[in-house]
Image (cartoon, rainbow, N blue to C red; front, side, top):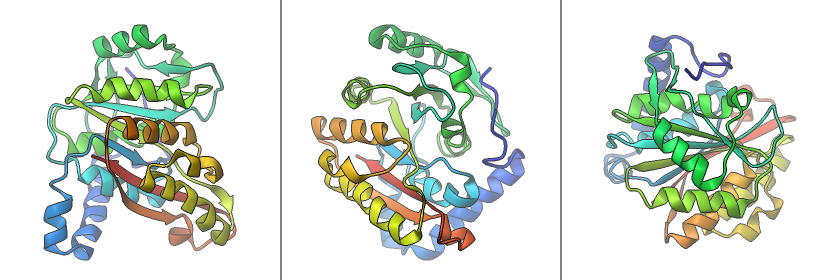
Length: 264
């Protein structure tokens, strides 16, 4: 079983998780009119870009994108995220049989994972999968998607073109939902963070990889690969939400940026 290794990023009580998600969704309900609500939440995304910080800071932003998936069922959800602890060649795919969550355990699609491992010559390095950038997404997936199966891919030293080839392959299957995990800039002043993050947001909005040059994101390779695949597969992007840690803690000297986006 893929165990929880970073319990400080989100609640470890199922009741608290549901309360958080209800709270995030209540804010949306109060701030989006009915016409836009119907339009937004009938979209069936093929890909998401979501942040992976503590839910206190980035949970609302991530929840907004995941809520657009609440009509999806029987999806295979492939989470693609950067490694924060270990550096290694290429990418590692999890081959455990289930993913632990505080509410219920989700099945890992081991057959599909093994096929991906062979097809793209991926690693399986067990210690790599002690990673918060995928874990924080799992309770959202469990809440919004009925009967999901999970595939976890953690990358390190990989070219964006190779990762894009994996994404292209995944997009060929309508049963797949791809989740790209990334925060944006880290520990700049709020003024600097907004300027730097604008590059990332504009790159995704325009699907223009050249604008990623001045983007600072821990999942920069994943975002670049997403843009490459979106262009090849004629997808359209929609920026869902952007905010910074300063919106929560009022610290404008050391700011982290968070964006969520969908591709349809």
